[in-house]
Length: 163
Image 1: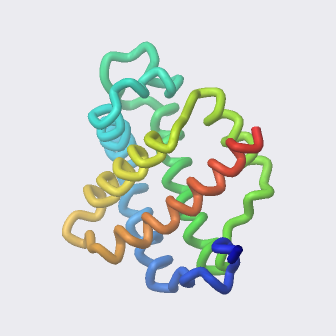
Image 2: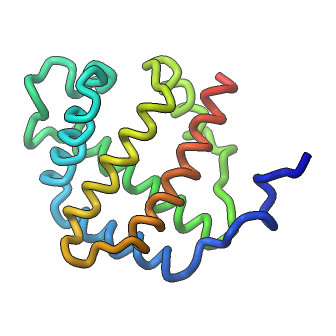
C-alpha cells in the first residue's frame, strides 16, 4: 500500500500560498474582536448544538462581544492555521510531536468533537477570512487556508485517535 502522507507525494505549499495566508492573517488581526465574534457566530449558525463545547459560550445568550477568552481562542486557531502554512512551506509537513497537539487531541475527545465539527469550523474560518480581506478574497487564498487548516485538522484528529 502506498503511503499517501509521504512528502514526495504531496503538492508543495508554495511561497505565494504562504504569503496569501500571512496577509489575510494580518487583516484578521487588525480587528480580532470583531472577527472572533463573527467566527463563532458562523459556527453557531451552522451547528447551534456545539455551543456548550466552548467554555466561554456556555452561559451566554448568543456570542458575547468584548470577551477576551473568546478572542484568545479564535486568535489561537487562526494563528495555528497560519503557523501550519509556514511549516508546510518550510518543510512540507507539520510537527505533530508537540505537546500542544497531544493536549488538543485530548480536549477534542473530551468535548466530543467529530469530523462534522471540523468541517463547520473550516467553513467558519474561511467565511471569516473572506470578511476580513474583503475584495482581496480569491479562490487561491481560500485554497491556501483550506490546505493549512486540513493539515492542522489531520494532526489534531491523529492525536484524538491516540487519546
